Length: 192
Image 1 (cartoon, one colour):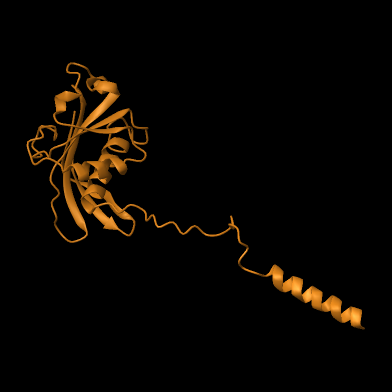
Image 2: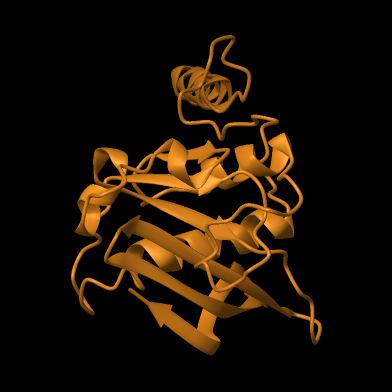
């Protein structure tokens, strides 16, 4: 009976030792405790990003459901007055560097995005269709954000991609739980 008691005691000691939480080494199964939080983007950057996505991916005027023909996106780095020139006259306030950086960071799903100071910096004047802008790109102009009722904003925007390739409109952009999204066009639409 003494052997049985010793065997049970040893079994108990080994069982308790096996349950120890301090193994002295790293545990690859542990949950990461990284202090890196996901980036927080300003509402202004989210709004402009939603508008650029809508222009390039949906309202590109090359047919509903067709993929975007643009291979580069050039955004004017100053706001447009939103006049009838399809938003390519950057005659307003310049966009801040931090805002431009955020818009670029939010450009997932788009061709490369670059900010330019004037529309003709990337224009290949005389080209038609998508050949009117370097790298088969598009030049986008944005107007100042207008804030009607809370949770919605209005943004004028447009693009130029050649002599016979342009679009201008005003978007209603609404806030939801997962950010800002263009919900519809409001006002007149210009298409070239």
